[in-house]
Length: 465
Ligand code: SAM
Ligand code: SF4
Image (spheres, rainbow, N blue to C red):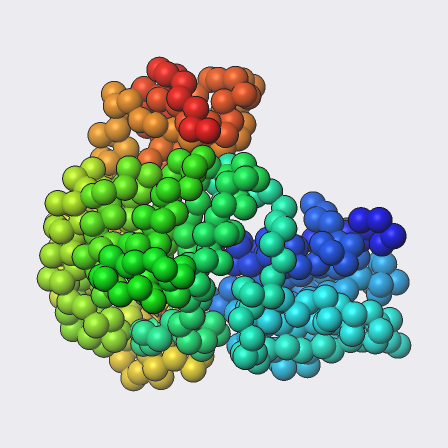
């Protein structure tokens, strides 16, 4: 930047892909006022801790990291601006300033477009006696649309990019803190999403993952004069949006995450049939295989609904690989309920999955439920479920050996001469290949499966753009 001294910004990101996206956008917002990314917090002019509140002792982890950052801040003569962002900031803002008074800025996920103004306030108040921070706090849900306020220019993200299209959630699952920390569901307009997607592709992205806490609930204003899958002209659903994104020249791959089973409509299922760019991999959390637990979780779908949905998706796209989220030990879960979860897993056969022990989140209905499950039972159930899921993941990977898969190369592997990319099913794939292949898609014959990746040999080079 001409006329502005370059300052060093270090962002520490915890949690989901939406936080990764938010961290990138915070850097974008701060770039015009002179902040450039720094790999190390030591000596940085500003450090942002972008936090996640979804499980475990989230707040305690934040305070222990803040203790470490405090020493780095002191080493800069308290010049370093220390900010806490994300869902822990949203949920526990005042507590953070009380327990860590050296923090300068606390901001929720909906206010980061206001960061330059917060930084200016922090800089004016900075360097208080005793190393006290500026105490700037912004955790309300502002009336303006954050996405309309963000700058268009973004630092290149690389071959694969995230694009948030939807935020917040109105589902209120019994265990989940998201509706409280991220607020009500909000969808960006199709125009603003398509503009950002074209920009990402112009900057080198070949794959875009469309993000939302409940991404398939996306219902955004359609571009003027357009039609939707359902005939209305004013609002599009996610299926229609994916069809429009698939037309962007140079964009080879599309993915979306995370979906709720209740929001998979016909047009979105049809998009899996119609769009070769939409990768045959879907993360579709089910949480439990027991109808009793699903009802207690307020999931609004049964195990049979989920199974029927899987059948429709597989009819549309027979090679679709499924992933899911599971919670074991939700309040009231019995051994029989847990067995129902195992039965659902055996029936569906997942290519991969995430599974968690239920973790009470303050302020959520399940946290106050009387029938909490003993920790030892949660541990045992989690081990059993994870062993089954690991076997299924291994079986799926073994089934890939001998196949020729399109791999989008994203970077270097750990060994000299090795490059790494992703299969259509999101598995990391290693091959020996030239650096020039990074950013392109090639056909790879899979020769072996390792615990968390595949290896193969190049069969054919096929450039996407
Ligand atoms: N919107 C997605 C859905 O409908 O399933 C999930 C989003 S949530 C951010 C990611 C995952 O974290 C959930 O699918 C759930 O499995 C897990 N999770 C959320 N709250 C949890 C809790 N209190 N304890 C354990 N796992 C939890
Ligand atoms: Fe949380 Fe997903 Fe349920 Fe929304 S739908 S409350 S984000 S688990």
